[in-house]
Length: 249
Ligand code: SAH
Image (cartoon, rainbow, N blue to C red; front, side, top):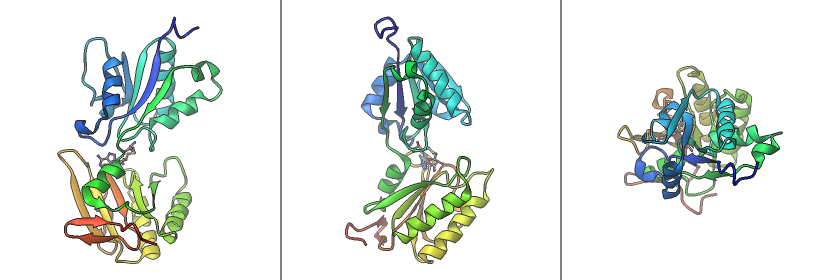
């Protein structure tokens, strides 16, 4: 069917870390033109209801089903926005949508766009100072989709390469032991004096920021609303800020 008969589209949009002022104007525009919003319950709840807009909140564990449902609607002529927190390409829905496109040339022909958002580590780094000011990497500590051995290997290699590191999904009630192991690995590789920032609920009224050394860090400092930033060997404090000098390494 031609695009003229079926002018549906699918946008995968990032809502930023929490503060409405961190939603980009192009995302706001897409939300205002949408007929359907698809996403994890708390993210869909951030979109104001209005006439002509149907909200489709769903549980987080069914990302591929959610992506397929969104594509079905776009193929049927709906204007669909799939929402993620932060950036949709960072441990979020954009990959799920592209995975759903595999083997579906009909869906591949749809009008699909990804709109970036401010990801948690960038909002957290800005709140702390500039701990990601030199080379850094970003690791998802959830072992839902990969074995812990992979995570441990990546942690060790990143530490040995002296990257600053940002960790997403550091610790949940269902897997409290992973972050205990991560801290042990980091202490082995980076020593006790390395700075680590726990940034919780950044840009929301619950925001809490604390910077300690690895020796002082405890697993309870992180939860699922926390992004953890471990500095490189040159990361230091200046006044109340933490930064990594441009010349590190
Ligand atoms: N797509 C999102 C990340 C989804 S994974 C993004 O780009 O930000 C979910 C993880 O993101 C959480 O476990 C936490 O580690 C981090 N996160 C999301 N929002 C956050 C916030 N406001 N403050 C701190 N961490 C946050």
